[in-house]
Length: 151
Image 1: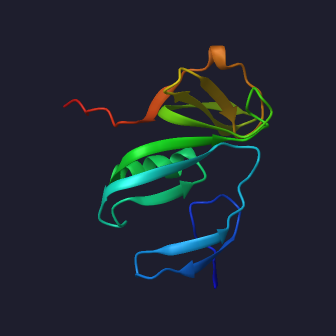
Image 2: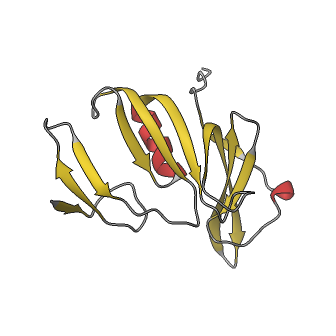
Image 3: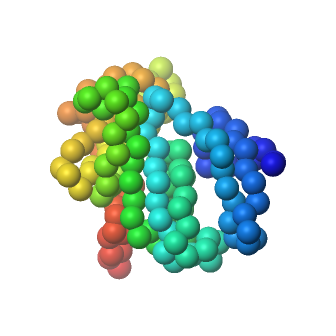
């Protein structure tokens, strides 16, 4: 069993075992932060991943980077209890992620808004400033399925 130190996860190490083929890795234990959403996607087209691979991603910017290099069959978001209405972990199918940046005390901070296929919206602030979402200017970061780019 080896420990991965370079991954898409924010601050968590995880242990992994090689699978039966060079393209498979098993993670018996994964630790996610309980303060931010995380993402699960099924890859259907990629040069770097085997078809039908499941990928766990800890942040929206890494998710955007992954979407730039491959296609998703499905994209789900795990919402920790600290951000959910129920106070428990929830899973929703993701349709769009938007991003806004503000400057506080001379430092830029990013605020994300997640839109789900159910119509539910969640806004979360990485610096926990609790800036009012109504006054933010959000720009699209990614959508599922990806939107056609206009030329």
